[in-house]
Image 1 (cartoon, rainbow over the protein chains, first blue to last red):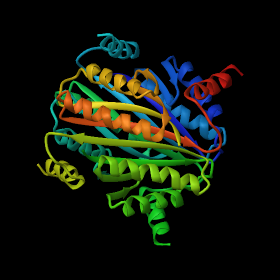
Image 2 (cartoon, each protein chain N blue to C red; image 1 turned 60 degrees about the vertical axis):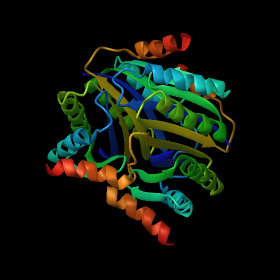
Image 3 (spheres, rainbow over the protein chains, first blue to last red; image 1 turned 45 degrees about the horizontal axis):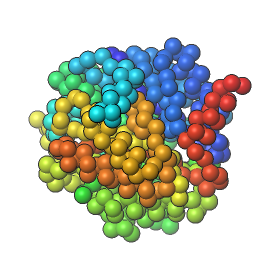
Image 4 (cartoon, each protein chain N blue to C red; image 1 turned 30 degrees about the horizontal axis):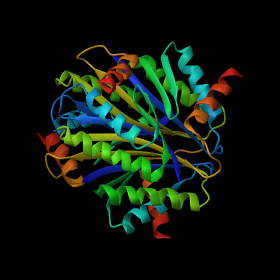
Length: 100
Length: 100
Length: 100
Length: 100
């Protein structure tokens, strides 16, 4: 089952700056061979369900290992059976409608 | 790694009523032995990371098997290493502050 | 336009315990005359669009005024034009399917 | 109060394709003078609280006016009082950590 997901990891109890932890998650997702795209409020991820969620679990483990005592994460995850669709397809589909 | 999660499964392409699909997910979570609490915009879930996410995957598979072509799910998931905390603890902690 | 929403306010930069800030938000929602129900990963809210979002804005203002430098909030919000539906209706609708 | 938000509007009851409705929301956000960036699971938005949420309300109104009977939206919204931060700042901050 292929998924397009969006991951927003929020580390608590370490101060206001969280970019070091987000960067650690980016590395984990990339090393997992997942297609990703960082944006200003999360990261788009494309891959197989098990691969995506195994990587998200490793993000939590890694961020805790960096000394973060609490994490609150928001995940959007979409699956569909009618057809294959990539992250680029989704963006292109909206952009084409915007040109009309 | 214990988690407290909140699951909101949104089936697309089947009409406005989605309670049949949500009920199917509730059954899956309960059969997985997870502690859950249904509310008006999702379901609280308490359990081990792997058990919780295996059950969420089964929800997607089951809802697709019911004929739903597309699903967009929102998951909140919290982990902490400083102490154990249950769903009831979280609610009680806020309610105690409200009494002060 | 009536909405059923779910609010999850996450204060950053103040330590791991956030129940004092969540309780402050609960008071604001209640004082706004909104129907609410606290759960383990947020708060269900029922009301008119403008009232709900004005109260959510006051939550951010109040939590910052308590000394919290950064807030990351997740909001689910549902609207429908086919029929009126309350928070209780949504839960009951799923529970009825569970009995069948 | 400046916000960086992320908006994910999910139209229900109209079939699996929702790009026409998402494009309508993009136009509304742009016409509101907000800085936006479309991605594969939502749209980043930067602006004043009132402007951002007024535009999100218009998105719901417009999508219902297109014939969509039900909408379930997920919004992430961040505010901070310690310093000003743009969407570009947030992405750059993570990318710099990735180079180290």
